[in-house]
Figure 1 (cartoon, rainbow, N blue to C red):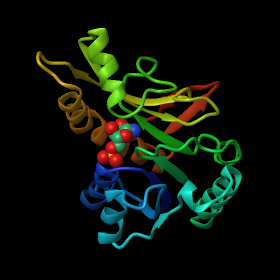
Figure 2 (cartoon, helix red, strand yellow):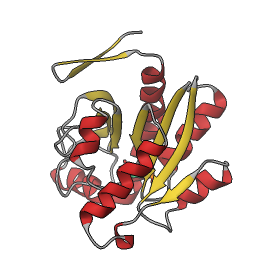
Figure 3 (spheres, rainbow, N blue to C red):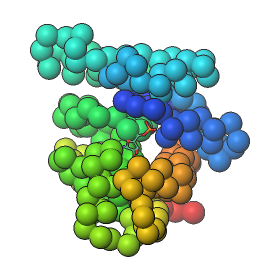
Length: 208
Ligand code: GRF
């Protein structure tokens, strides 16, 4: 049984997609052991609590120093004894010691086709604003392992989404979530749960 710990900061629709996928069998042999948010008002925490999942808020405001916040976050993660950590809209830079400890065991969902519209400053609606401003016709989402960079780790899955006439950043964000994020994140977790993701020199391969 794969133990996953999900880190969230917002509405939790990706968390909900994971929960629903476990319920309907798109993800098997997997259990969400804990949800951690850096925002007490994140609706994602409510989703977890309503499902009877241990949900904890660790926010930087509770700690005087950044290092103390990071220590508390790492301790809370370690206490969950996760096999896999999933960043589902988690707006906190992951401490290096956690990345090293959980090498190729931290997954992130990013709402673009990396390497486009990613890296510092590209998060949430800003990603879709960038795509619309550039005039690309195709965007999408990417699931990747987290390394020391920003959105630079080994790419696991990607899914393309077309941009339509009249799209606003909000409309596009919703389409990317519905058509891409909520599909490839559960799929990536299930592949990981069944040992089907292999990383060689920063490049992943999927064994079916
Ligand atoms: C999603 O758009 C995701 O791509 C980005 O943050 C947002 C999280 O949304 N990383 P939710 O909290 O899962 O609804």
